[in-house]
Every structure is written in C-alpha cells, then in structure tokens.
Length: 401
Image (cartoon, rainbow, N blue to C red; front, side):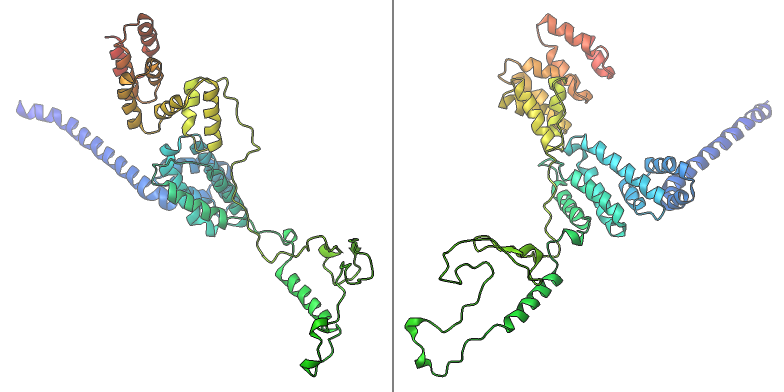
C-alpha cells in the first residue's frame, strides 16, 4: 500500500516540478529581455523594422525602458529618417503632457528630459536642432516651483539648449559683415591720402595764435556750414559716390549717421511667453477646476486662472487657500485638511467639501471625516450621495457608518 500511494503522487510531483522550471525560465527570459535585449538591441530592431512598424516597436521599447527620455533623445539623431521623425514626435508629445501637469509634480522628469536633449544635441543635424530649439523655448515658460531642487539646473540646461540649438543667422539679415566694414574703412583711408595737406610750419613763432591754426577746411558731405557765405540750411544731400555705403547715400547734418553693425552674430533675445496666443475661456469650468490650474508651468495661464477666480469674488486670502488646496504635494493638502476645521472662516465647510473631490484617497477620507461631524442634515445627505460611488472602499465604508 505505501508503494501504491507513492506511485500515484509521483506524476503530480513531476508535473509541478516541470511547471516550476518553466515559470523560472519564463521569468529569466523576461529579465534578460528587459535588462539586456531591449536596451542593447532595440536600435538594431528599429533600424531593421519596416516603416509601418517603427512607431509600434518604439512605443513597446519605451514602456519597458528605465530611461525613456535618453532613448528618445538618442533616436532623434538616428541616421534613419523615419526613426528620427517618430522619436521627435514622441518627445514633443511627452513635453505637451508634462506641460499640462503641475510643475512640482513633474520637476524630476522635466530635468531628465532637458539633460537628455542637452547630451545628444552635438550629434543632431540642423533640422533636428531647430526642433530642439522650439522644444526648449516651450519649456522655458515652465515653473517647476520655488521649492524644487531641479528648478535651477533645469533653467541652466534650457539656457544652454536655446543658445546651442539656435539656427544660424543668414548673411542677408546682417547689416554688414566685418569684411564689408574693413573694405569701407580702406576706401576711406585711400581718399584721405589724396586730400590737400596743410602747409608746413617752419617756425612756431610765425603762427598767429589769435587767428587759429592754418588748417584748410575740408568739405564734409551734408555740411552746410563749410561755406560761411551761404545761409545755414539743412537740405538733404544725395550722393552719387560709388564708395559711399548704400545705407548712407542720403546724409544730412541734422540726422544721425547710420553706421554698419560690427557684430557677426547679433544677440537674440530669449523667447518669452507668447503674448499673441489666445488664452482659453475658463467661464464654463467650476471654481475647483480653475483652482487646479494655479500650479501650471505656464505663468500666463496661472495669471489667467487667478484673474478668473478674482472675477468670482475670490479674495487674496481665498487665493492663498486655493493654492494650498491644490498643491502638488499631497502632504501639504493633508496638512490643510487638518487645519481647516479650526480656521476662523465661516465658509470652511465649503473648502472641506472641495477637498472631498481630491485625487488622493487620504485627503478625501480626512475631508469626509471632518464633514461628517456637521449637524446640517442637507450637507450630510449631499456628502453621502456624492461619495457613495467613491472608488476607495475605505471612503465608502466611512460614509456607510
């Protein structure tokens, strides 16, 4: 009998061992694929992929990559055009998504993105550099928050990106090159040599100091005072001299002389907020939805949101409270929930109700727990009705008490 029961369990044991080995092999293959095959060989896979599959394979690689920004930045400089174009589009899409989030929440990602672009910039062709210049200009309006440690390094990286990716200025846009200035000065010097020199002075004592030095006055273009007999007027003089710069053919004594610029590369002012872009209409949004826009990277949008709340009779204290209520740091919002019930505000119940809509479960639970102590039956009915469908089982259990 012992031998019979042992023979019955032997196939089960062998099957379990075989399944365990298969699972271990599958896990090992997954670790090998994610840790070695994807990072090391995805470039080869993308370069050999048909154009229709490049986007799919790139997205699959990015989902399993621990350094997606570095991968995208590297692929943006690929020799294969379809890979560079797709990577540039993917990078722009990620920048657009980060811009819609609070700066403090995405500070680390924004810094990594700027680092990746700055590292790969020397390998980019001019067309890709132009795309990077627009990306950096867009990110220059971001505000990662005064308390963020990445804000300073992020701004330094953006300054380097904007400067190093700036497209070269065409020669036609320059007022004059250095060679043009040198040619002009040489021509003026040759003309000066042909001028009549003053008579030599043998004895210093022969000079009548009261009459001035014996210099012969030369005619200056446009100088109407060279001839003292004529009445002083300021007519415009048009010169036909081929040696005069085209910008200076019309010269008058009462007009400033237009000299060519001496710089080869004019200084470009940094790109600031685009004042011409229309701001969205916030009138259809709730006050809470507008409050969540107080931490966007775009300073123009933050100002627009503040003005919209002021139009809804928000005071300076209300704006400060709204900024804390939507702070990207959850710990800050939890602290506000604990402080609100003790605040000397008649509308503290309204602000606690706002916080029952918070994306964090702990904030919603704390706000609901504070409101449940109210004696207002209408508020309690409204609270239980709204939070009956809360995705958190913990919050639902609190409401059912």
